[in-house]
Length: 258
Picture 1 (spheres, rainbow, N blue to C red):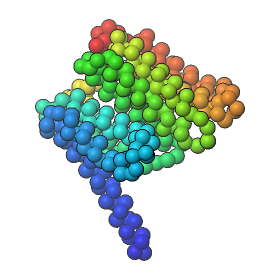
Picture 2: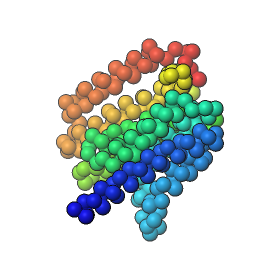
Picture 3: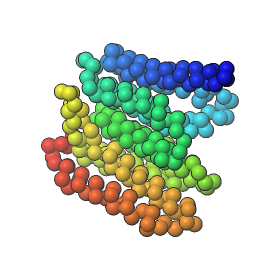
């Protein structure tokens, strides 16, 4: 009973600390009007990554890359939502960060691993695309490469023992290429919630769909000795293609172009 009580207290403390991390990191960003403090807090919260021998640092960084991407991206999105006053988007991004830390991140099932990777793909590319106008395009493309590599590795490292290194770099390059192309033709969708308007770019949606198909195809090839079965890929490919076609041909008017 004593051990169970200690475990329950430890779990509750961990949850409270995660909630505080999400709230404080985003609140610092809103109050200060600067993203640096929030990002530093996110990075410092991952102190365990380097609390080992230096030879394990790189391995730990790769293993935690998805968490880094999600946390830093949400802080940047809070910053991009404006710091004049608290608005609905600040609450939405903070709430998702809490959900990420408390519910999504601790899970290790196949479906939750894919949701974690898709969250990193979407939010990472979201933040990079919104900041693209203020940074060198090579920085945007480099960030997209890292995001794609980290998300793909997060999924492929699970399960069977196989060499996934090439596949992770291939998807990273695909994500970087998409970021490069859409850097010159960036489409945004304006979404208003409770009077607060924010722009959602097209690129992170396309990247998430591309990753969805890529991961399904790669896993099918692994399961069937290098051959991709049409039954594993047909529905994901059709769904993603239809969404892309609708977005590109019906929701890419010039007045949305930034």
